[in-house]
Length: 196
Ligand code: 5GP
Image 1 (cartoon, rainbow, N blue to C red):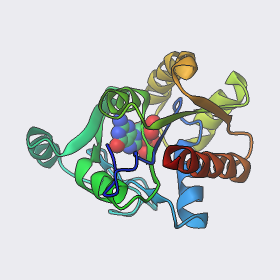
Image 2 (tube, rainbow, N blue to C red):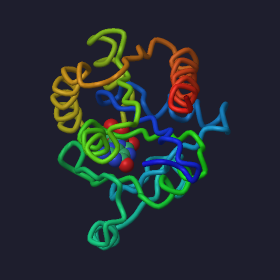
Image 3 (spheres, helix red, strand yellow):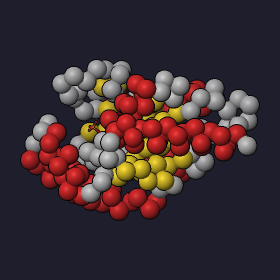
Image 4 (cartoon, rainbow, N blue to C red):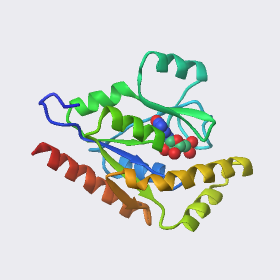
């Protein structure tokens, strides 16, 4: 995809294992770098305490999600952890890229693979934990999931960690602000290199 002046896409896709902190890093970018547009996904899961509809996610019913999916309104979508469905609305991403504005998607691995099929020119960034122990700690520490759900998420995370080699770049999430700034510098570099 190219923007209105024929320049290539400025899309960066951030993926990585469960609970590595993708959402926190994306929130950091949204808060500190308003020049970068961050996609708001749709999900069929219920909001967690403190989550706001339209800000963290668009929370929709299964029926609504299915209606949108059938109409081809998702750039990608996936069932995550075998439970809820999550998807990136296509329209807003296409509009932002057409304006030549850098755009960030924070999605799971299955979604990243789908985006790569449609938009191989995007930059694919893998967010990794400093260690496996750190990842387990983060997942257990959040305390919002049941024991059963944690087990499922850890199993998913192990498989997801193995996928790092599929990505263009790996960022280690040792500190949110540092990882966020590294991501922003990639967004800027990506823009510069694709402008040439
Ligand atoms: P959570 O329910 O903890 O907010 O997110 C669960 C997982 O869903 C995270 O790994 C997150 O990256 C992923 N996710 C969030 N939005 C999307 C989306 O639009 N598409 C896909 N494929 N995954 C998403």
